[in-house]
Image (tube, rainbow over all chains, first blue to last red; front, side, top):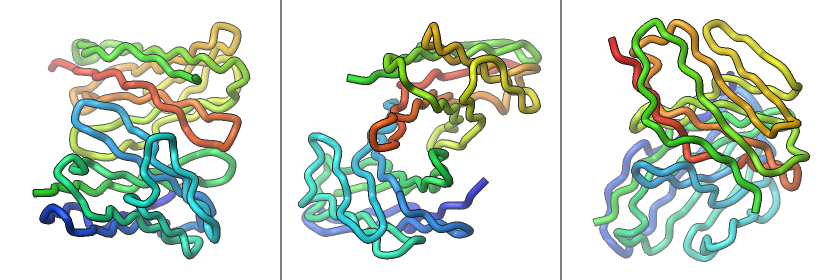
Length: 114
Length: 111
């Protein structure tokens, strides 16, 4: 399957700081990437759909000014959690869509906000 | 609202048995269906995709789709302890192409 990487894999930060997470498709070009958040013992929650060269589409209830998404190239999308607070602590996972509809996931980034 | 439903489990089966995981979906016009496996603390890994009614086999895994009943299942033959994980059913939303996930079924294979 297609390979998607994420960086960093784990980050611990102080409340009020901003954190940037990178998602890269390593062996293919992805015009569409997705960002998910997952809390313990819960399923994936889609935050936004990221399209190369255009603005991201956010799901209802997700603050676009807090979770900034940039998809500047066909292999890179970034998620910036601005002014992070402890309630933002979660497992953030990106995925990239290959062909019509198959999504491959990155390994995830575990964010802990102190 | 479009929904995907799974039993949360845990589903416990002995090693070597067949594990049967079930999923129902609400959007009758859905065309693309996926099963992902997620180990604790890891991200989901694609196991199977299925698009047509009937069975699709890949090694020890068989996906079954019945669009009339809006039902998709995953069978794991000769279950191994390493199959212990949460299995996520996902359905592609025809509008926008995003995946709608079920809550996941936790499978435990006992040695």
